[in-house]
Length: 69
Image (cartoon, rainbow, N blue to C red; front, side, top):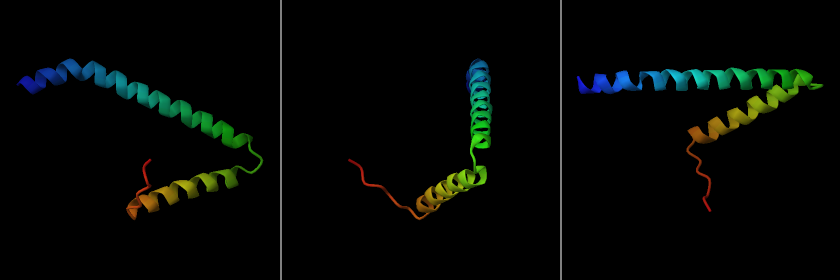
């Protein structure tokens, strides 16, 4: 019962936080899309970004750890 009361008190905060994150996602998606359309070779830029994300994902899956300072 006590957990339900805490959840009821936090519900507005959770809704506002999720809404803010969704708004930021939409904003940055639109900014990225418009920026991509202005490039001379948008597919090349998209391929480079996708390749970089794939490289990071593969290296993370392999367990590569970068040295820390």
